[in-house]
Each structure stands twice: as structure tokens, then as C-alpha cells.
Image 1: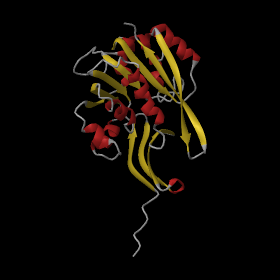
Image 2: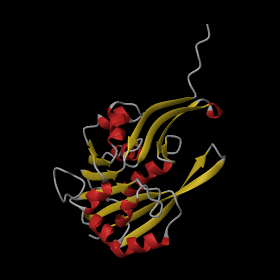
Image 3: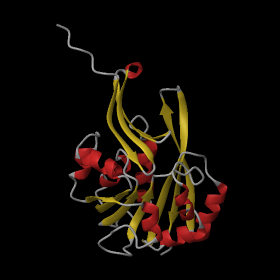
Image 4: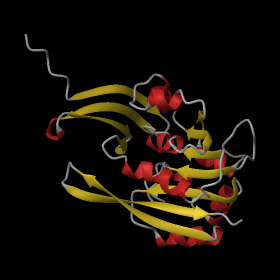
Length: 245
């Protein structure tokens, strides 16, 4: 007897949240050798797909590469957990001794702890990693990203939440993308600390100007990656900014 074919589409979780309907689903792409793909949908938009992880990984790798190679015991904060690829990339750096991941949606943290997503077991079982339920933008405007140590500084802060500085998941995030918001963020970085941020849009000149007013060294990197669904090469941006000594 021939075993049944696995389903091409499966909804793993469905929740109503303050930011809209949150869905975790798994798809099997027959056109890509039955590749299994995990997707997060929030409201009307795609939040993340395991088919496209190049930029999420580059976000961590590019930022940590800017820190001195001899510097050990790095502390890193990540805004946005998603499917966990930025967190995983940071944890692969042996210099990282502590990773704090701030996620506003408790259901996303639950997916990792229940191991509903591919990286769940790896991330939530790593003793260096703490998953914290909280609004990154509220914490950035307040006492920082470690509830147990208000005002604590990090060697790197990596942000992967909004689609771009202009295309926000929620309008209340807008204050972060301002001089006062970025200056407040800088106060949570060690000397020579790195702020890095993902954007799905090309480099934004206005946001680049803001970064230059707050940080002495800034750069916008274009990261390309294949899009097998459309047969094209897609592009995203990683903004990099470093504090002074």
C-alpha cells in the first residue's frame, strides 16, 4: 500500500493579537523538490518565511563582524524573534556569551518553546539565550532590554521587526525612527557597540541622515538573495551603526 502524501499546506497555529491575526503555517513546495517551508503571517502581510533567511542571518553576521575579534563575552540584544534565524546566527558566534531576544507576541515565544518551528529546540535550550516577552520599542524608550538590569548596555543590538523605517507594523513604533529615539537606543550600547537593523526596502536617505547624526560610523549594506518562487534575485538592506570609543 502506498503511504499517503504529506499535506501541501498545514496551519500550525492561529491567534488573534493586538497587531492583527497571527498565523504559523507550513507549506510543502512541490516545485522545489518538496521543500518544507514555515511562514509567519501577521494581519495582511508576510512577516517571515524560512525560504528567505539570508538577510536575517546577515544581520547578525555583519554586525558582530564589526566588533573587535579579540573581544570576548559579547552581550547581544535582538528585537524580534520570528523563526529565530537572527538569534541562531548570533549564537553561532563563539564570542557571544549572552543573547537577549525581545518578542512582543507571546505566541511566537510559545512556538519556540513547544518546538513548533525548526529552530525552536536549538534556541530555547541554549543556556546563553533568554526569550523575553516585551515591546522592543517601548523598552528602547524606557529602561532597556533586560528587565532584571534596567539601563544595561550591550555590545550589539539587532533589530528585525518593521518592514522598513517607513513601512511599520504599527504606527506607535514611529518614535523610534527619530533623533531622540536613536539617541536613547545608543545609550544602551557599550563604547564601540553596534546597532544593526534589517529593512526590506532600499536604503532610506532620511534614515541614513538620522543615523549619521547619532553614530560616528554608519553604513548601509545591500544583501542579495535568490527568490526561487519568482526566478529573480531579491534585495534587502542592513543598516550598520557603531558608537565611538
